[in-house]
Length: 109
Image 1 (tube, rainbow, N blue to C red):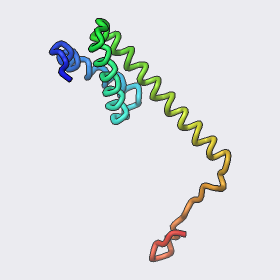
Image 2 (cartoon, rainbow, N blue to C red; image 1 turned 90 degrees about the horizontal axis):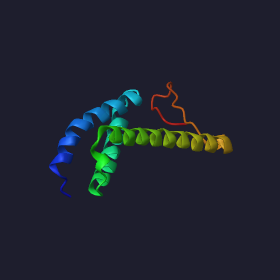
Image 3 (tube, helix red, strand yellow; image 1 turned 90 degrees about the vertical axis):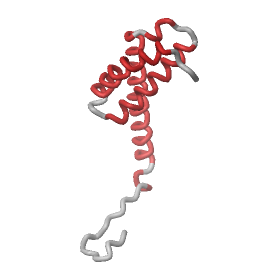
Image 4 (spheres, helix red, strand yellow; image 1 turned 45 degrees about the horizontal axis):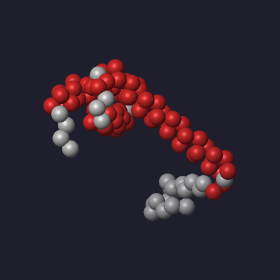
């Protein structure tokens, strides 16, 4: 896959801005910001290859980044709801094992 030099130039400038926007929105979660930046530019590359002229404009790219951020928060909320439902259905099935600090072997109980 060979992208045009204009995309490469655009990416070099835009990626920093997109990453900064996402990192601020994610309260400094660098790993999530990197992932969402990658997802954003994957979508931008696809759009640019299919001939969408707006794909290489900052407003359009920031809109894509915003939508990726919204999707991220929706996934997180959905996962949290699933965990809450699983806990509500059978909290007794979740066993917590405690280490007895007085036990020199440190065995699990």
